[in-house]
Image (tube, rainbow, N blue to C red; front, side):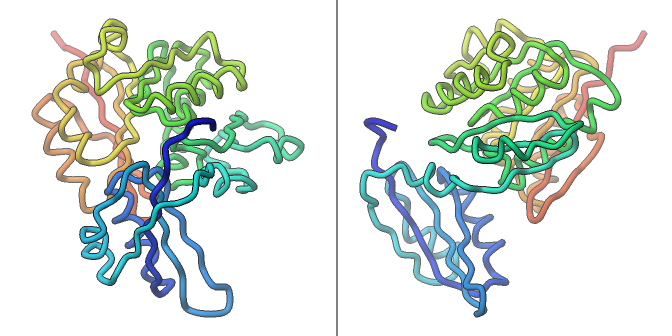
Length: 288
């Protein structure tokens, strides 16, 4: 990507058994991507995180429990480079793939083509695959016509919803790069007319607010913004609507839920993958 900002890399060497916990901790510090490289014939590995701004090395060191090296990288699209050649992902009925996998798309799936780029969400991270699997399960029980993907990244969840229900989806992200990537991916997947990608910080954007209330809200972000945005997310959910929250760790489930239960939202399901969790909540329909 031309004129892309420089990236910073934080890396730490550790034993293989420690990689999942350290990578999950690094995910909470706002990286563009977290990578794990393991030695095939030794009990050693490297966890690397890429950032658009210089990260707090002291904080990362405390999280890892050992020194973390931070350095500025040359002007190369490292995120795209790191994601090229990744294998396809099957999550429920969804099949997420890149151009190099096009001849390998199996029959009977809902294909989503996502190219590597400077935005989060190729389907390979546990939270993205987890959310796609939850979407697939939701589709067995009901359909939606008005959906919000909050913090859309590459737009993979928005595209998945648009393909599954042929419904209109608002895809919002605070990152302008993610907005452009989502638009491009929606066009590539034949869902351009169904997916409207907009730049927004939360739900205050007039376009995002104007489409509310939503029958389904997808928010695969992190625990801190999930708690901070709880009142506005709850206000934007229609009676009988569903809310999918992810980007949180197991130990953060009760914390996040404590911010949504006061808004009359009911927990319907928890799904876990590795250290990550996805919560499905619902606003009961009004009675009487």
